[in-house]
Image 1 (tube, rainbow, N blue to C red):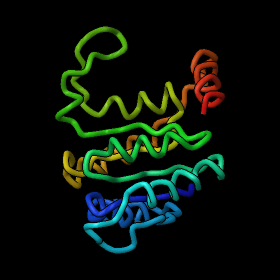
Image 2 (cartoon, rainbow, N blue to C red):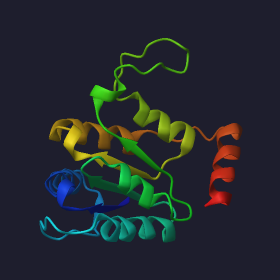
Image 3 (cartoon, rainbow, N blue to C red):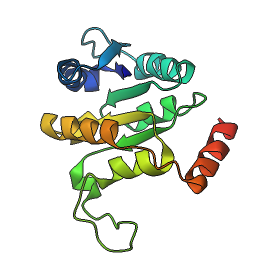
Image 4 (cartoon, rainbow, N blue to C red):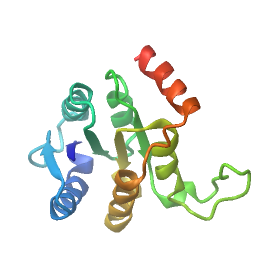
Length: 164
């Protein structure tokens, strides 16, 4: 599986750690930058490279990193066929209500749900809100969670992709 990475200065250190983890797990990793820490770089350049690669290579994945992950997800979702989910970390997800209507105690559940329901192919991580081990856990869950393939989810994805 090919995974494209992109980051600005705020997410650079976390990107490097996740990249090492992914390579160690045997994934094919393509780093779209930043290549070095530069406090004055502009995230849309590197995130755009990663999202364009995912857009042009169906079946590939992307993981992007920034301070909050918000702007990065916005950039990625402008590319056709890209469905980028944002994850801040377990501290935000703790108050989540699961699909049955009860409070979920799995603070990483949104990662599997975004794969199951939305067939997300990119993940944006807010590095200011995640510890290294949380980011790696998030990446593992995201990459290992399957798309359900249900008709209603396919129909919704088709609508999203037509608007892209």
